[in-house]
Length: 296
Image (tube, rainbow, N blue to C red):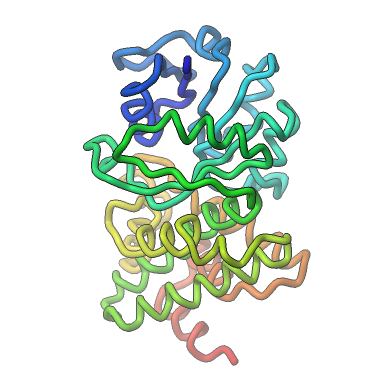
């Protein structure tokens, strides 16, 4: 396969390093990077198979400015919900490509471990199972891909787990112990599934790699950018200072606001996400914890 990875952040570079093992693979982004295999963006977009690893909040603008539809087969490796519009990624990409040409990558996967070639399992979700299988075949042996048709479920898992990861970081940063964090993550999984149920997601998705697997990983490790956001909030650091220290996009920050906005519109109960938004807006982490514990 001739594959172009669009987006040269850590996750894009990790997927590029994996896919180039068995495929003719290039990588590109809007700004020039000193990476072997890097090509100009317009040359990359001419490939038949495109993997997008672009920050969710920049996706619509990027596609409007750069993407020219030519029946490309697309795998979306980003996670999140667009804050401005409240749209899921499949809704954004569907404006530029037919749904049968779209697949979505999810599951527990830190970029640093993928680059090292450490084993992991991922999920490729698509309405087009043949396309999902084609993408699955492109991955090297140390990555085990599973196939699903629950696109919305995988998307909600990938977006929501970053929000719960911020709460997990707060829990650890406050020194509340392993019991408290396990309780928080478990209730976070329930909250994710409740949100997904409204949109018709399958319950099994939340118990699998896309849901529980990715949530448990992201909400309990300092390798997670969103978890580190929570650690900073627990120390009463400003959000601006936290993000400067991290130096990368933490998708859960914007996604939390999008989730709570949707939840208010649809009357979905999201207590953890709501407290995360309040903390991101300046609420004291200990006060947020008290409010979570005293709710009915």
